[in-house]
Length: 459
Image (cartoon, helix red, strand yellow):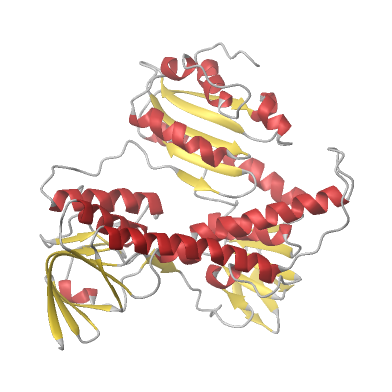
């Protein structure tokens, strides 16, 4: 080894969990080293949440223009638009670049030492990066997750993962998405709006199987309207000569011709390739087992984010990272959020915060469930969007709100109100009695609470 560095906190992984932990540790005066093998910002900033939202925005803008070229009810007429996907990708890369540069600047400002390279764990207090050895008092593992691959669909050539889908050289004429979860549908819908013929193959009996049927219904209808073909209860058996072989529910084999296949069947904790085995930690399936303080079975080793299992969400990793830094500085904390919002940026968008009606029932709670449709919301109409609803789940005995769900245009932004109401322990009366600005989509939140109390005003 050329040299040995010493630090209080060593973080492996510079994604949302790792970099937030490092920034907070820096603010608290904890000597910190962050090791990252690829780009700061991890999957989320580079090949995940941020670039996918950028591509979705391009797709939405392009589709709107195409729509206006075919005679729009708004009275906007344009010629048929063309798409320079190279320019679109450049714009997306510019956003990613600005954000990753910003993360680097924040780390520098808070005196975090960043080492670019691949970490190899020696033991709970020692990590090698190239020919450098780093010794630490606390080791924080934040290596994230990676796409699950299907053995019969090895990535390469016409078979792509979300990474390649987010940096297209051109839009294929035909695309088949394998996996009807949020990643597959977000990208499938974007590609459809960019002009590809899109089909989705899903092994379960409906799209977005992690969410309840009532909530995903508007998304299913939207897919139909967009002309996306959906093959439910179909499993993939192989791929050759630009043809995907799938087995239908009755056991027959179908051959689907396509130019590209996007494999989006989920993600798994990234536990391989950095000698995690050396620590011999307790596992929870394929994830590292952690307690309510994100401590592993080894006292000075912590794990956060996707590496520690579901829910695999950047904002969960960030909250855990911030907490671990505070714990190391001597503060008393535990990870016990009232709810962690989950958002699908499909068209329409979908939000789940807290318990769904089914989950409330399974937990033995007697609940009032009430929805308010966007069809009765003035703002939704002015946005040319009338599908979807806001749904509230509250205890019948004391009206304590235990969950919110919504599907509709722009509902991702309502997740803040939902999360806040659960974290503050709001009751139906609190939300119903709060004056909501008119005209906004947020009025549907108040109306759902009013309706649960038996007196919705606009229904």
